Image (cartoon, rainbow, N blue to C red; front, side, top):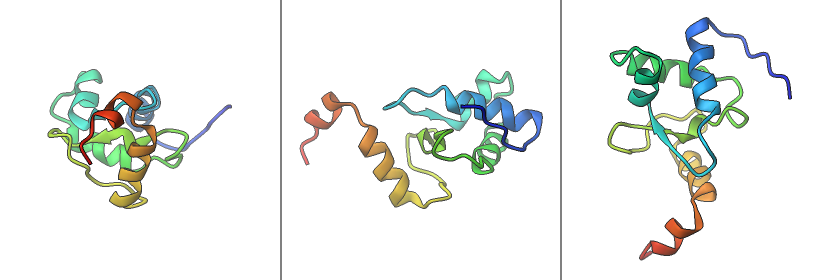
Length: 98
């Protein structure tokens, strides 16, 4: 499906990497910054992720904090947690105690 979100070059680079995060996976803002060759720009990556106009098609809920904490999500952290839970691999779900 062709997408044409409006954004600058940096935002598009971030959104391309976010769009490549596999179902059931996560990455961090810092990892995305490193992949862009700009390890000091994790906060700018966070701003680009937050500006994502296609938040389900470009799954920004899969980007988490450096310590794997849930951070910022336009739909709220409860929705982010719910989306990540829906995508969680079966072996991870089966290994949970609760």
